[in-house]
Image 1 (cartoon, rainbow, N blue to C red):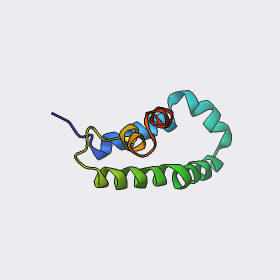
Image 2 (image 1 turned 120 degrees about the vertical axis):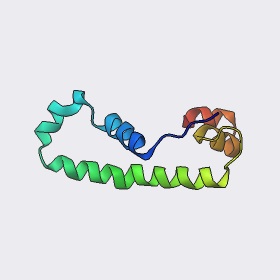
Image 3 (image 1 turned 180 degrees about the horizontal axis):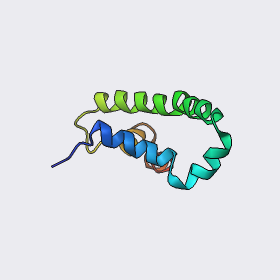
Image 4 (image 1 turned 45 degrees about the vertical axis):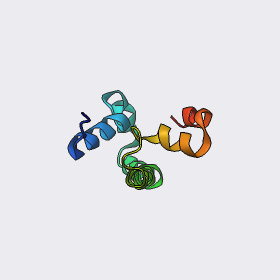
Length: 85
């Protein structure tokens, strides 16, 4: 039985991965310019990765477990799949 992660849990997981308590002192030095960096990172990295994952998960819905390892392994082989992970 596979369980799906909810949208709220996914958002909290991403926020915790990007801005943890350990980063707060250095984030305080950047002040409001940090908003630009977060927006830039989301537009350049997070949104394209989300679109990529959505496209591939809909293209290969029932194939093995899914995920980046299986998609890259199918296209380029096991060595490149290991590098991608």
